[in-house]
Image 1 (tube, rainbow, N blue to C red):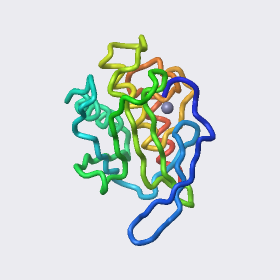
Image 2 (tube, helix red, strand yellow; image 1 turned 135 degrees about the horizontal axis):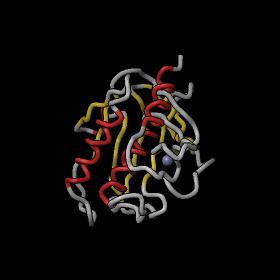
Image 3 (tube, helix red, strand yellow; image 1 turned 45 degrees about the horizontal axis):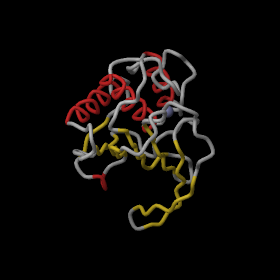
Length: 186
Ligand SMILES: [Zn+2]
């Protein structure tokens, strides 16, 4: 989100899953649309506390709000789980991102290109943008990155929260339509 779109930063990692060692590739979200390896409910782990300056339980409320927003899309089911190892998507708070790029999502794919895991890193401090109050800007960052974790790429539409530098602070009809068509693909 924000700043230059990161391209070509893929690294290959080895990912242990059950008893088999399978090669998975990790990419920084943004350019491609991806589908999950399994249909149905995605398990989301959210780092439940942080000692970083500016973090508060408000951050958790904003994650819940983002989850509810995306679940308005047919076929999106997200369950918050309390243990990262069982999660499909993991959200961590950080103070190590530049203000121009306050969220990063790493997508892990199997050999068929299907998503197996996603890791979201969200800056505790809202980006210094003027599209809304700090609360709304922080929410927009969380919801945007969650959109990547669901498989969405960036959207050129100025009406989309998935725009690389969004002008809106909520999940819009444009975003819902994009996700709906992604999920309906055979
Ligand atoms: Zn993005």
